[in-house]
Each structure stands twice: as C-alpha cells, then as structure tokens.
Length: 126
Image (cartoon, rainbow, N blue to C red; front, side):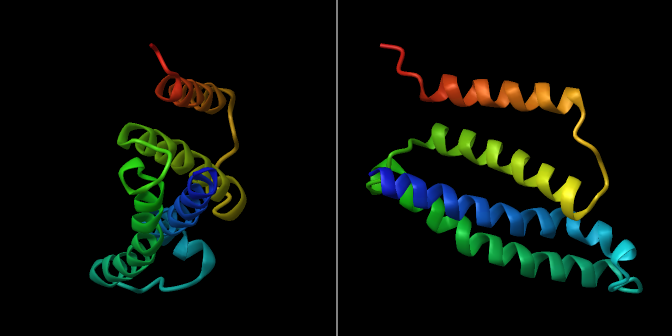
C-alpha cells in the first residue's frame, strides 16, 4: 500500500506541473517571446491541451491512491495532499521557472498552515 501511495503522489506532482503551465504559463509567453500575437481563443485551446496532459496523470494518481481502489488515502486526504502539492509546485514554478516572485515570510507561514492541515487530516482522533 505504501508503494501505491508513493506512486499516487508522484503522479499528482507531475500533473500539477502541467496544470501550473496550463493556468499560468501563458502569462509568461511575452517574456519568453513565444505566441505573443496569439489571441485569447488560441491561448485557451493551448491551455486545454496542456490541461489534458494534466488529467493523464491526475486521474490515475487519484485512482491509485484512493482507498476504495486499494490505495492508502480517503477523499479528504487526497484533496489535502493535492492542495499542498499544488502550492509547492506553483511556488517552484513561480520562483525558478517563471521568475516572477520571491518566497516571502507570509508565504512560508501559509505553507506551514497547509502542513498543519495535512497533519490534522491524517491524524486519527479515536
């Protein structure tokens, strides 16, 4: 079951890189000198294509990790894991790939609170 949980998380991480580019990558096109003259419809279609790649990893990641399919996570746990992965992947992309922001103290506090959410959702309160 541990292997299924690990594989599930890896797939969710990969999926989130695609989703970050689908949602925010197009905002960097001008800086990267690509598709600068593309219209909104073209950008939407490109984002959908990238989001399709996200689904190729997201759906199996959730299915493999879900307890009713032999995985270790319930729905709430999958969602909290997903949110933490989303924030970490977005931060990595924003700082190192998009180069738009710096990691500030208030972001770190927010991440710490998300880690607390992970603790609370996985803690057994019998």
